[in-house]
Length: 344
Image (cartoon, rainbow, N blue to C red; front, side, top):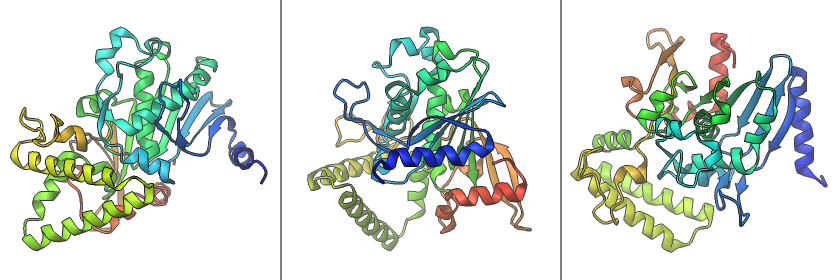
């Protein structure tokens, strides 16, 4: 095709039109914000589409999950940042709401959310629609975390006060601090399929998992696997080898700090790393809002949808099994919804 982006946009428009949706805006390839004067310069941007449904008076912002190298770079940018950073556009935050909505979040995903809203212009597009249009933000995996942070940013925005803004994330990653997760109840719903590993990937849960490997041969096996994974990742993204060695040194410092201090205490600092806390590197984050946990009954194999949150004991540890990765696949979510006759 002479213009593959235009062809993809046409195909998407044709795909959603029978359901009554109109494609308003789209960015169908992820990438990097390289503009010199951009507030989010250097941020990795996810793919997304903005749709309108005139009959139901809805705007739907759909953020794609991880698919290519740029998406993976967003995923692994897992240090924490503030939702409302000092550089946050002053027009996009109510000063009386800053303290209420600010909190620690996944850095890569909040950068993507900022790009979508402020640099690409989705915020302006949402404001241009009639105020009685509800705003729905949805996504899977990376897209789910970005969608949740878009909702959080709009919740603090003075021009969206009183608007009906909600988000739903499938395979929602741990992307906000617990206090912010609580505030997003009623605004964001995290859907988790059975043993899906991604929503459980928090610093605390990883430390719990580490304690399960207590034999020397298990620890050595884990060390070898991590080295192989890091080597494969570095080749995949094309980063310099020196950066990999530096990161491994930081990770070793975090492991030492994690073994010497209780997460959340004043001593959980990485001794080798210039005052960087173990939590700040690994991100002691959780899934936002209420959780719909798609559980399988052991005695019958039948599914049920349980309304809960991330304090649920079943979501407080990483399940070591092959299906913990399979359960993250979006097709698995769709199959369960259809079996339960839920609206997907």
